Image (tube, rainbow, N blue to C red; front, side, top):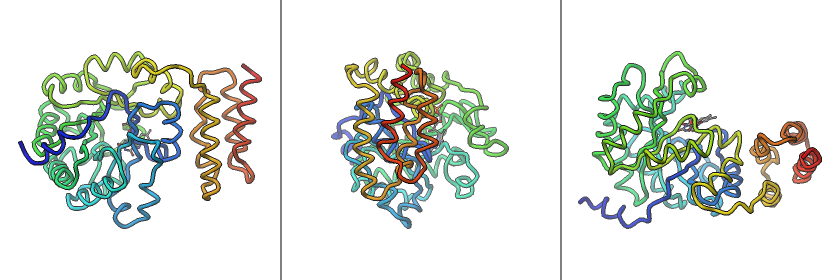
Length: 334
Ligand SMILES: Cc1cc2nc3c(=O)[nH]c(=O)nc-3n(C[C@H](O)[C@H](O)[C@H](O)COP(=O)(O)O)c2cc1C
């Protein structure tokens, strides 16, 4: 057993049954604070932060988070082993619970910098990054990938990728269950057009029962979560958690056994308290308020709610009261 696996064995395992996907421009620290008010148990991921932004940018702005967000994982974008190791150390200093490497983003910007999904074609580079991060920190080091890219999408290609990366110490994989096309599709199309292939992810778990495997892609409801959990260790939810965050309240009950006493209005009350504090520190209201637009998804009055906030939220003078007025509109219609 290597020194690193000894170290890892001592850490309490994170509960990975349900996690919220890293999403650029969405899962910033405000959104994570808000989601945590709804679910105490889900594992949260940051947006992808590039190693360059951490090493040469405004680090504090990119990395700071509220203690209530735990458990929270930092997702890194990068390929250079030395940079990744340095960033993993910084993540540990900030108190993140996990470091995750993005091997799934197909955007041109990311491809030009030679990281993200195109790294599925270079498993040795991913493996070297994993090894360097594991040597640098005690934190779990995990990888989020696709099931393939371009014409490298066979079962054997997928297994070769996983085995190469696992050989350097990664035992936790989050798999977006569709391939990515590196040319010709936008990132949005790459989340919609290549078909989902859950079977490949289930098969991976069957082949490597010792690995922790989280499935991702297209999950929108509680019953789907439990269906997947019969086959894999975890389910990661992206768009549905943003568009319908109250889904997490149901998951808290059905997966984690929580009680149902929280209401949307209680959550909002507490989020408004947070917004007030952050506004005093100079954060614009709408940068935080925009994350609540989906809160009443599926409820009578949801449209009035969204309209009130999106029309009034960006105006000067908007604040907690704007959200209270929006709640009043929903309650009037209920
Ligand atoms: C707006 C947006 C931004 C995203 N940004 C990231 C990112 O920073 N890192 C990443 O690994 N995946 C990113 N993704 C992909 C999601 O993490 C997830 O893999 C994908 O949306 C599929 O899951 P879903 O069907 O539950 O949404 C993003 C997705 C969306 C919609």
